[in-house]
Length: 237
Image (cartoon, rainbow, N blue to C red):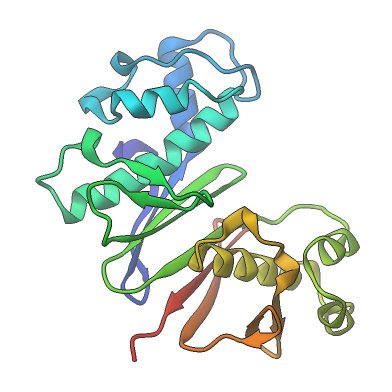
């Protein structure tokens, strides 16, 4: 597991993160169990014996083998590997295979055997990242900076009044705001079930459904050369 970790440690308030290199993990697996496979090929049957230390449970292998592409399989595997690493570091008595996520009705993940632990998961491009916080609710999003038309980003995820204020902003700044919106939706456990346009960022303050959001802190980091990582975190009053 250590060979695939890019970073592990505290980064924001009491939040710990673990960043996993998806490509490196896939290349290890491919060199041992596949021949001439691309990450973008069809999914393969992945077996418990393929991974050391019984990292994943039987239930988790069912989830892994339900994906249609290797890319989706290894995005999931990488994010959960990062999460298991963080949990094991803080709760060493728990076996890896017992560190399982379940989904709420809206798709938000939570830890089956540690429901009190706040978690967030994201992946983009080459990397997957998991975050835990023992005290505060969190939401986190990672996005790769790509060569994309700025107008496409604006009209896909921003309201009319936001666009008026952002039309002169550079792509990197707009994508950073996008990740903050994604982070907030994860923070309120909505994820992809809510439109990004319902979350507005006006003068560095978040509004949700036109109402100002209180008692949260926001931060963003540009890292790994061309990625932006954002957090929304509960303020402890």
